[in-house]
Structures are given as C-alpha cells and as structure tokens.
Length: 278
Image 1 (cartoon, rainbow, N blue to C red):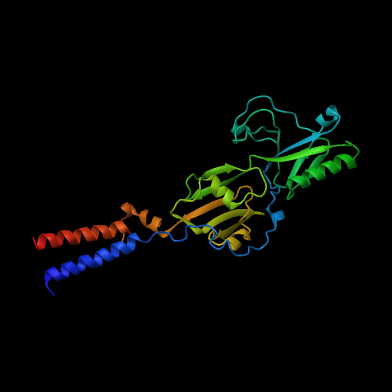
Image 2 (image 1 turned 90 degrees about the vertical axis):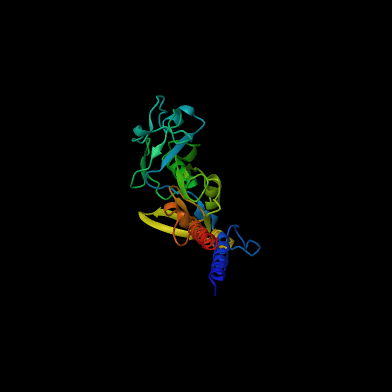
C-alpha cells in the first residue's frame, strides 16, 4: 500500500470514528416512555409530610372566644431578627426562608416534642399536619380547656435540595404534601440535555440512617412506585451527568474518550498528509 493510500485510509478511519463519537448523544431523554402501560396504584398516604426533629411548625388555635384562644397561641414577635438568631422555639419566618414578624413557630426538639402553652410537652414526632391538629384539639377538649377549638398546623421553612444536571440547582422551600421528584425537577428548571433521566438519585435521612433511592424517569411504573417518588423535607435530589458530559469535564476535555481528542488527532494526521504529499 502506497503512502498516499495509507494516508487516505487513515483519514477515512478517523472520519468514521469522529462521526461515531459525534453521534454519541443521550438516547433516553423522554420521560415515562412506557406511560401507555398500566401503572400500579400508589399509596398516597405515605407521601404526607411527617414531623421530624428540628422541623419548624406554625400551630394556631382558634375558637369563638378570642381571648381564650390567645392563651394557647405563642406571642407574635414584632421586632426584626436575623436568620442567625433563630435559636429559640419562638421564631418568625418569611416564605423565602428569611425572617419577618407576624408568624410564631415551634421548633421540634431532637426527641420529637414541642412545648405547647398550658398543655406542656407534646410528643408529635412522625405525625402529619392533620394528626398534630387532631391531637392538640383532643387535648384541649379532653382537658375541658376549649369546647370548640380549630387548630391550624403548617410546616414552615421546610425545603429540599436539587443538585447536578438541572438548569437551576439549589435549595427550594416546599411546605405542602404530595411533592414529587417531578415537581422538584420542574422547580429546578428541568434536567439539562446531559442529565441522566434513568439515574436520578434521591438521598433521604430516615431515623438517622441515610438512604438512597435511584429513579429511572423513563419508566413510569418503577418511578411512581419508588419510595423516592414523593419527597420529604430535607431530601436531596441529584441528577448525574451522562458519560458525554463526564468526558468533557477533564482538563480541556482532551482525553482518549473525548470528541475533542479525536478531532485533534484527525487534524494532526490531515496536516501530516498534506505536508508529506504537498
């Protein structure tokens, strides 16, 4: 084989390699590719937010007697305080995680208790908002303190973190039940084209034990029936980059697996061939 033919063959091989590498784009970019199939029933009850240590709760008691109700509500803090001062059981929180006056909250102790006016120490660990409301209402009526109480319970300053290959990573405040991983990803601006749809990680602290759930968003049934589908407070959602993106994160993206590397090699060989046969 002559040098010219060898050079031509080498260029052809490099062109084929280049085209093959250039075509290595993510294939699994569509969510729920099998959505036309039957999806198993989901236990929605398990998706309710439940009280955990260090949670912050707003608990307000209402009744026909306003003066009586005030005995069971924390005093509203009217002075401005900073985030660094949130160390007591009585705090005020803004919707964006900052501080304002007007809403007093309870901080759940490590044992899962709160110190409630007149009722004293109440263990509410693991309860939903409705269960906390019913529990306090029962205590007020059972002790013949309030005949017609209405107890409103809300989670305050509860959030999750979304990291990795999403358009707007960060921590997000979520104070409602039934928040799904899809909701969280939508709040983060959806996955980038380089995010692995079939390998989304949800990290959760359950009773002091770190658990991880991997979700394949291309499979509707597996995703919706995963314990990680419905999120809880302080969950971390991590979207791993695909192999193409990982290759680009090396120094200048120039390793033997990167497209840039093979482009450089092809350019070098072409230059050599031009110089030799000029």
